[in-house]
Image 1: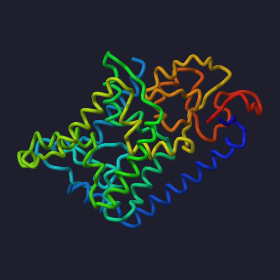
Image 2: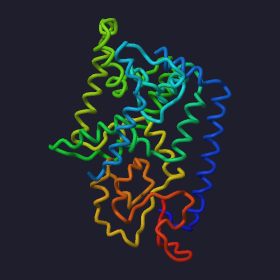
Image 3: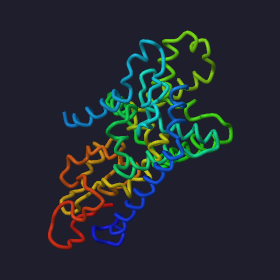
Image 4: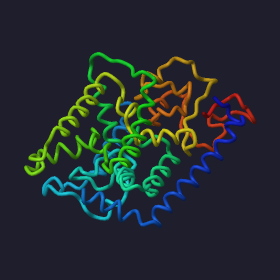
Length: 46
Length: 280
């Protein structure tokens, strides 16, 4: 457990920002690789 | 009704991703552009009324082809990074079914703690490693949600599909019946022990934007939060427990509330009261 204001708590917003940046990068990477078309085809032609 | 708002969201999470009703009338799959969107729910895209794609099915499809679906990974990371496992608790149709099944009166049991690690094994084994090695989507072949929402409707509606039923279908039925039966005795057994999507989202509980905060000054350790929790955890011991579905049922207690990762003092208080609130 980490109390508010402790070192662990201070690191949590940073962890969130790193996670958010990684998530957006992964999503953009998938979109630029045109994966949506393959997802659509896979989902529509099961 | 105490949990009316969550039940309404669970109803919407069941109906909206499966709103293509002509699929049932014409016994055909929706093939429009929305099938290119991964839903953040375990919702079978082989269901005749499914509008959106299953993220686990998508991950497996790419793994079977020797690739990684960055689109599915990104979609799940954006959702998980925003709300943690909240979609499991508030929107998932199979989670809603398990919640309802647990309301049956009868013998109740608790799930051993170690079973929570099985979902990570299911994620690694059935979603990534085995599909990569065999070029087959093995989780989809065994998924109880797929059996309920895809397999059973197709076998019922289509004689051609019915003629293709083999022993694997009965294995799928047995898996579905196992989870339906155990759901009447144990709180959400599939979500806690077997769901690969829950395994992915649970990785984000500690670093998501939305957080559950606990106030040790007002908490009496009565344990009622565990009684009402749909996955049988104590949020006062660890509000960022990977099992926590962020359903917010426990926030009926004033010692627990929803906050954000940037909110240092969710329960108010004076300047720099490092001991007044814990956000874990």
